[in-house]
Amino acid sequence: MMFRRGSLVILSGVAGLLAGNLFAGLSLGFLICLVWQYRILKNISKFLRNGGEQNPPDTPGIVNEIVREIGFLRARHKQREDKLTDHLSRFEEAIEALPDAVIIMDANGHVEWANEKASEYLGIRSSGDRRQRLSHIIRQPELLDFLAQTDKDNPRNSLVIASPVNPDISLEIRITRYAESSLLLVAGNVTDIQRTNRMRKDFIANASHELRTPLTVISGYLEAIDSEANDISTEWQPRITQMRSQTRRMQNLIEDLLKLSRLESKPSADLNNEVDIAELVSVIHDEAQTLSGDQNHTFTLEIQDDLIVKGDQDSLYSAFSNILFNAVQYTPSGGVIDIRWYRTGTGACLEVTDSGEGIPAEHIQRVTERFYRVDKGRSREKGGTGLGLAIAKHVMVQHEAELKISSEPDSGTRVKCHLPAHRVIAVKQTSAAGN
Image 1 (cartoon, rainbow, N blue to C red):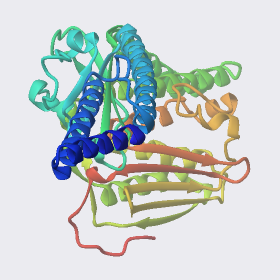
Image 2 (tube, rainbow, N blue to C red):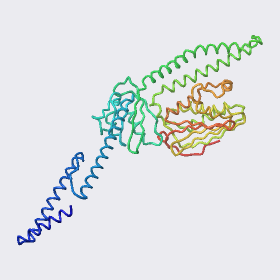
Image 3 (cartoon, one colour):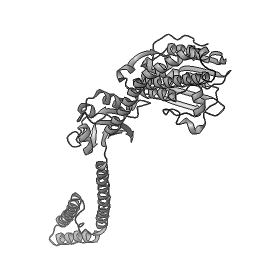
Image 4 (tube, rainbow, N blue to C red):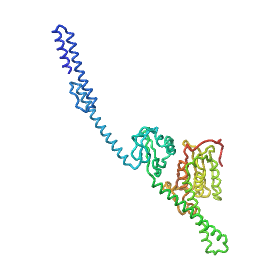
């Protein structure tokens, strides 16, 4: 190509020399070269503007190699783009096939994409609501609070709300932060599960109420019979004692079931009262000492008394008393029970540690299940119903708190109730507490 342009310039110079004007001839040659170069560059520009889809222009020399390499790069890029588009299309088809509503948002809660179920369950349309803030579309306070707490250190795992489109549908909402600047909201239909849970709760509550009265009558008659011990034959006295013991156990079970039923039916509004945990724990500590009786347990009490918790006092009393009374029941005479209430980096914690028999590792994950007992015989002997830790776990979940149990056989048990920072406020003047 350089040879051709050089030849053209030389020929133009010779022509100008023959015509008597060398400069004009050379200028004409350079002008022709520039026009030729412009046409080549224009063809290359057109080729690039068309996305490299047409055949590359026929250009001489090194320019031709550059153009062809650009064409190859364009072709490879197009293949990758087609493959990515195909993967994205298949991903969207897979998300559309899910039974759950899926919404992708940016870090500020603006909708970027949503599947069809999002429209059915939440009224969010991927096309019409794109770049709209979710809080401007759905105005349910519970959902807005749940969305706001995703930035906190200990966010709630899920939230159950009524569908804003159809109130008869119950939705379990989960929000996950990913890629540092995006949020993924998944809403599943849990209507059947909620209905089943309501039926179970209603049955337990109704059955417990129905059993409570006849058990009270039976207990009264047995107490009256037992008071006339002199008129009862020696053969029947142990039988009467056993019947009274079993009746008391049934009454305790009914009371725990009713307590659990009341806790489950408490509205969330009751969970925002100010509760003085230091005072509450002191009361429970005194009751635990009374329950210990002549077992000579050693209690240590360490309380940070400037911490107030937003919650329900009766529920927290039920949880903490069950934990501490369990420690009393399953710690041998002369054992040690430590009680601590203190601030942590992410909230506040009630910690109860005993020197009891401990819990084998295979049972720890299940001890908070209803009616689960590590040693059924020992639990019945001590009057346990198998509901104490289940009640404590339910109260902790209600208060967005965490219940942790650690234990080893023959080394005692430690139970921690960790309440999140947004439920803990410090308003009292700190003073020493302990005995």
